[in-house]
Length: 114
Length: 112
Image 1 (cartoon, each protein chain N blue to C red):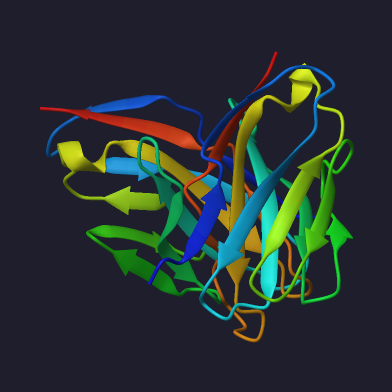
Image 2: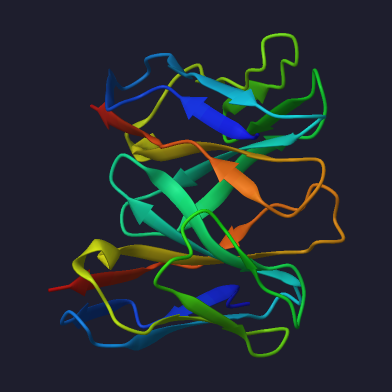
């Protein structure tokens, strides 16, 4: 059981380049999330998708777009990368129907923007 | 609004020492509370959770009690091991909505 899988695990970009982080889960979860983790700031929510076909902004959505491709997949796109987007990105999922359903996380994608 | 404040680190302890990591929260209603652990180079994984006041979550020797009167969910372990070295995150999910709110994390290093 793979759980939550993120690709790529590492990426280096130049300012202005674009890229997409991919996330897939095989747990039949309906809600999916993208967080970024920065030193001293914990995890901050970028976007989430409560169910297939819906997406909502989190705390720090500027500079990002998301696509909920189907129930399994939720991608995060940086259209024009900036050094401030250097971070570790985590995808997570949960079963919304479970009243206390916890988040399950991927292993993270480390992005460096030069 | 919802927020989580947790004890800043880093924390360094000797093996078999007692651990407490403080966590307090602000929330409307009755949130669910969680502790997540992140080992080096890995994603976060659930350590324990509590869903209502006075519930005690426990796992791998760690415990935390949901205290509504003090809005706290402090993490404790009686005897830490080197393998407990990690970053610990306190989090809450409000009783409405899908969003989780995380503390800034506390780094723990246990030395032999």
